[in-house]
Image 1 (cartoon, rainbow over the protein chains, first blue to last red):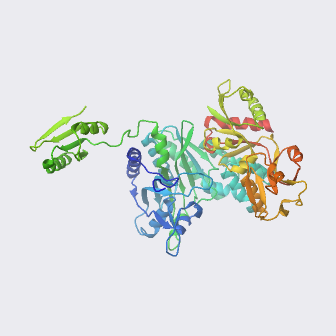
Image 2 (image 1 turned 135 degrees about the horizontal axis):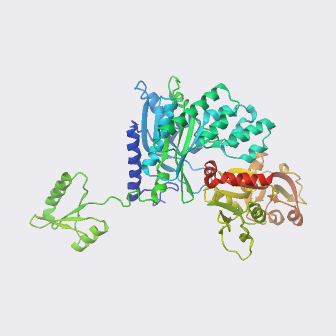
Length: 405
Length: 211
């Protein structure tokens, strides 16, 4: 077994690394243009830190043995770590904080899946200590700029509102509310129909189940409902957000408003969203995120809560989506030039020539031939590696440049 | 084009009839000489995949089919991440515990602890015995489960019963009904949320036929 990675983990070879680097560089560049600064947090965290928000079950975390008093886990996402770092280590900094990351995360595959992936790469942003519609709009526009910047085709963004859905669910008796919520979150209409609810509640449960579609239509339908004051404010904010997005985006955004978009457990308090793309009858979840206005309080030593919003993008899914296009680099980086000392006596000269060539052109990749092969073998190697130029260092120390086709 | 996963076996005929009501003709699958596993309807509006009933939710969960028809029993056993949309009200059957007629046990709670129970529905059987707090050894079989008690391998079985004829002919009696099952319309969650290929219209039509 020492020749293999564990099931679900894998090695990335140079071409794939180059393609994913291209994707990630592109994303980080867009994050930067919106004023986000990169943060690096620890791969290892206390299990308690990772699960404090309530959205991550300990069974989802790959846990590590240590001799200490408390359990450690590999991070399954970055939001908890960044929230922890921001409220403890960056307290007193200027607000808001715009932070971005590129990192690997680990998830314990649930039972029954054989060899399902457990290590993932993500890029994402967190906009901390800022609430309000404008911050929400910034995040959605940043996400759509990322998708457009990468040249993803056929994508759309599903938007829900965790707070609004929660308030619509509060009409249901507490004893059955969780079941209603689970039926809606898991899209189980049949179970919802069979719940013991009176006719009026059943109608509103099914209506909540079907509250999705074009944002304007859905908002129109919600406005007709009997809402409490808080919900009314949320609906108005949602209207402002949609209006702001439509009037500021360069091109109309493919948005679907979906009030059944929730997890069975999560820490989101405001908008939640997913960016989805379909390629060749395969669906990809390219990004996920939402607003969490209670989470920072869990990590604050004084328990002071502050708003936050963010998203993470899946590098694997973006890569699969772009694989069939010509956007990604099609080849691993190649060397531009091979410097070949023809005798051992001129090796020092070859190294000097190579250094000279590297200093002349900062982007040039210069290789040294390590000897012990014939001229034909060297040319064969250069051919295979698509090296365009050979610099032969002759026995008298002179160099002869040979350009290959 | 929308793709629909259809289950081989007991539900196929009713399923094909259901879609024919919507003008989607997949009756080629009923032709004994047909060997094709993927066909389009004659109007070229939808494609159908012919797969084993247990595999219907797999194709739908991974999104290769946007819709599928499958028994509730399979959904209970596999717990796939799919949208459960319409109870199609055909293919009725129930998952039951059965024991030999001569057995001293008349209910599953009376079965001896650490006894053996044979079943195709390993997860459902486990859930049931967990719920009555009875530790048993579940013996997974993939067919002819009735032979378990007949040959003496197991004390009881957990299996689907539709008419009860098979149980009777093998000298078994039903002791507990775990749940009742019928055919369900399921959908790929993201395709359903985003109304890809106008799934919602098709779902609404199927629903209206069923009420």
